[in-house]
Image (tube, rainbow, N blue to C red):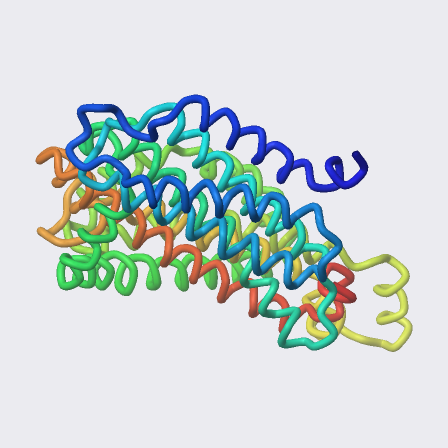
Length: 375
């Protein structure tokens, strides 16, 4: 009983296997290419065998390996069988899919309990666990859309989106160049740098601080859908108008966060600097700016996503015949939903890389901060 509770995912997977046996076959009788008997038996053996292994006292790495192989091989067989038989999956199919998912869940749980002795092993686990988690989001998405026969125009499966990605690399690359390398990067740099500089001036000049911050809070609440067409009218249809939108969206988060960060240093530290006869700029460079770094990097991370969103939405209101926002708005009108999802996938990937680079810079710069120590 204790082992069953310890591996409740394995116990529930066995129950689902028994329920699936009672609901066979895995596909409707009118399916063009139903599962072969050997494939069905192999899927059940993989899932049931791995579920039983989860109750044993074998070493954690061995149990995790068995669970990983069995869960992914079983679901690969299920997905391979449903291809070409869309909408023909039965309850038994989804029960076995859920059982495989539970085994992957148990695998991640076991992996999370392993304490590697080497740094490379720890890095490997840190990458493997989220990779498994992310892979199963795509697996369940694929199985649900194909198994339930959801129309591709409503929600295409990941395999269809991947095929569109592979077949549209030149178009996607041109869109990335227009949106990311021109509008986003230029607007992000200008907006963040100008916000930082104005924050230093506002910190130095009291009336500027009292006048700007309320306006900054008000401008931050402006809807991008109202600002974007105005910027297009002012700066034209090319990337400059999108960069202007990005500048507006990134300027005030940097301003507000930097001003807040400059006030984060303690009164005792500032008094100590004054006792050393430090002037304003010495105190700023040696005490207040280092203390403000977590706030500044927080603004940089927020702006990394705001910049991408702002540029893409701004392209909906006028752009040359290239750009991520232009492609999304055009292809959705043509009902090419897989291309729209391909653009979304590229935007998500670029945004994640952008955010990751800023996070790495934060870790290298604020290594002394408690949030970056001892992790």
